[in-house]
Image (cartoon, rainbow, N blue to C red; front, side, top):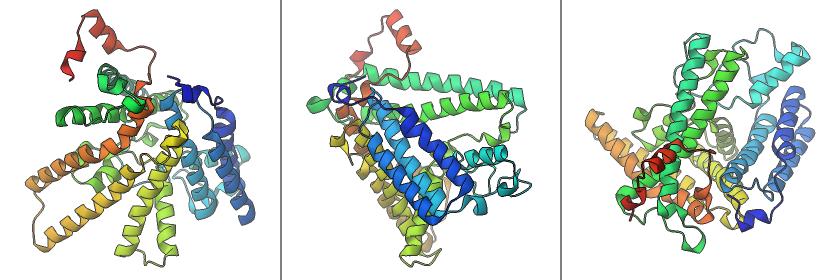
Length: 392
């Protein structure tokens, strides 16, 4: 939905500000020029990223997504051009000879894989703690992926229906209400519905893309590990972010954190180095979301969601201290301790997630429609079900 602020900005040239820089980065990975040219390229990337924020897609939610994408692309460029040497450091499990000795077409495909392999599946930098690789046969995998896509479509439609039928999310601007305004139970439901949107959309899009790629025999099923981990792993904040949530930004967040820790002179493996990397990762994640997504929705929202991301590093530090003290007191890990962990994580996100959502309600993002049709709302309307009576 396009509001007055969005209507005043020119439409985003997607090819110029997202696709073209992506192609350029693939080419730069391939040739890996001198340091001067690489740093100059990063400066050009930064210019295009900042410039892109002055445009709009015409929809607040899409603006947020594209804003995050272009800033994440900048940090990916820094990672691949300044903090690593892909031609020297990276190898795929199917690499028989170095990429520099392959044909031009194969090198282009190789650099495309590096650029678009944030979790490093099949590479020597594969992110830890991912789900097991699929073992299904080709067409069995395609069928299961399409079925998963349908399930996540229903999940997103359910979440979107809740959001659009809850009067709180129809408020915006100066009349906007916090998602905490309806009491603790509905606060948690509001958080769940809002969080299910990116969770379900990424899963749905990933499942559809994997079905297409495998059906065309472009990529084998084993390289399509599911984007999210197991929810049963989320009994600490650290495990939630490091195992359960997607790891799409882990590669460049980790390299930037290690670079900062080394620059400050901290010994690898030390507590100082670990803490520096932790806070650097969530600070950079906060910058991507708040200086990218928030700012593209509207410059008045620049930095709005940053406190949420920085708070995660604080929360992890607190729980690390508690866990360390518990171990010194010989408190053994048990099912009871794990249950306490689940309750702690649930409470933590019920407190901090409103810092991520409230500003977007004010900006009117919650009024965006992701799908042209809503089967759930069609059924509710057909049955004349008045959902509004369940909300205060």
